[in-house]
Image (cartoon, rainbow over all chains, first blue to last red; front, side, top):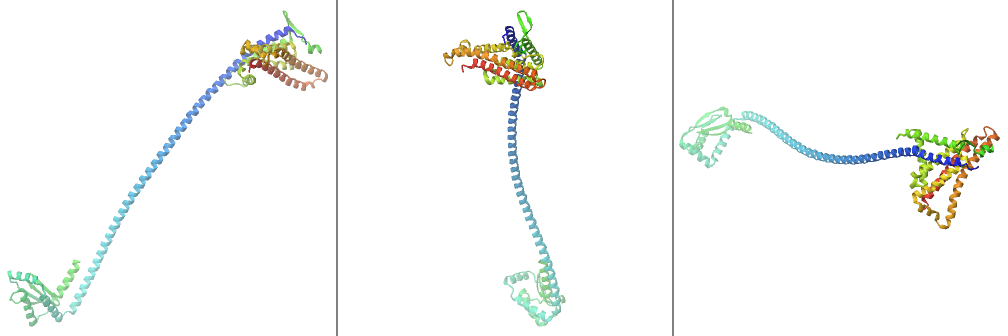
Length: 248
Length: 221
C-alpha cells in the first residue's frame, strides 16, 4: 500500500495526456458534430416554421379567397334568382297576356261562330217561315183578303203625313205620271171608283188610273205613281219579309 | 497472495522511473481511448451510425450530468470530468480482463487522480473567480472556518484517493480469495458485483470531483 512516486507522476502525466487527447480527438469533434446537427435541426425548424407561417398565410389567403368566392357566388346566385324571378314574372305576364288575347280571340271566334250559326238558324227559320207563310197565304188568299187589303190601303193613304203628301204633290206638279193599279183579282166598279178618288186626292191629277190584274200578287193591290210605288199585297209583303231576312 | 494483491511490482525501469503494471495498464487504456477517439473523429457525420450515436450519447450524458451541477461551466468542466469518468470506468473494469489489474487498485494511481482533482478545483476556481475571489471562499461563511476549510481540502482529497483505492483493491482481493477458495464458477456473481462496483466507484469519484470543482467555482453563490 505504499505510494510509488514514479507511478504517481506517470499517472498524473498519463491522465493529463488522456484529458488532452480526449478533448482534442473526442469531445471537441463530437460536440462540433452535435452543434452542427443542432444548427441543422434549428435551421430545419426555422425553415419549417417559415414554411408553416407561409402555409398558414396561404391557408388564410385561400380561406379569404374561398370566403370571397362564396360571397361572390352568393351574390351571383341572388342576382340570378332576381333575374329568374323577373324573367319568370315577365314571361308569366306575357303568357297571361297571350292567354288573354287567345281567350279573347277564342271568345270573339266563338261569338262570331254563334252569330253565324244564329244568323244561319234565323235565316233558315225566316226562309221556312216565309215559305210557310207564302204557302199558307196562297192557300188562304181570295177576294175577301184582297178587299180587306184594299181597305187597309185606303186607310193608310188617308193617314199619310202631310209632308209626304206635299212631296208627292211637288213631284206630280213637274210631270203628270201614269197611275197604274195592279190587283190579284179583277176589281169591281165600286172599288175602282173608291181607289180612283183616293189616288186622285193624293196625286192631285184627274187622269183615271189604269187597272190591271196580276195574279202573282196573290191578294191585294200595288199602285205605281210615277217614281212612287204604293203596295198592299201579299207578294210585296212576303218580299219585304224576305228582304228583311236578307238585311238581318 | 499478499504480494499479488497489495504490492505493485515494477515491470521495468525507465531511467529513474519504475514502470509498474498500473502505469502500463493506464498507458494501454490511454492509447486505446486515443485511437478510438481518433478513429471516431475521422468518421463523424451529421447522420450518425451506431458507434457515433453511442459516442454522442456518452458525451451528451456526461455534459448533462455536469450541467446539472454547474450549468454555466458545463463545457469548461466537460473534458476533465468526462475523462475522469471514462478513464475510471475502463480502469475499474480492466481487472476483469485476464492478465490485467485495475490501475485503481494502486494507491499511487488514485492519489494521482485525487491530486489532479485537488489541483483542478483550485485551477478552475481561480480561472473563474480570480485569485483573490477564490481565496475568499475559504473565509466564508466565517473566517473562523478557515482551518476547517483547509483541512477539508486535504482530507477530502485523501478520502477520494483512499475510497477508490480501498474499494477496488478489496474488490479484486475478494474476487481472488473466492476464486482460490471456491473454485471456478463461484466467482461469477462476484464478477457481476465487480462490474457494478466498478461503475459505482467511477461514478462516485467523478461526481465527487465534479462537486468539488463546481464548489470551488460556485461557492460565492
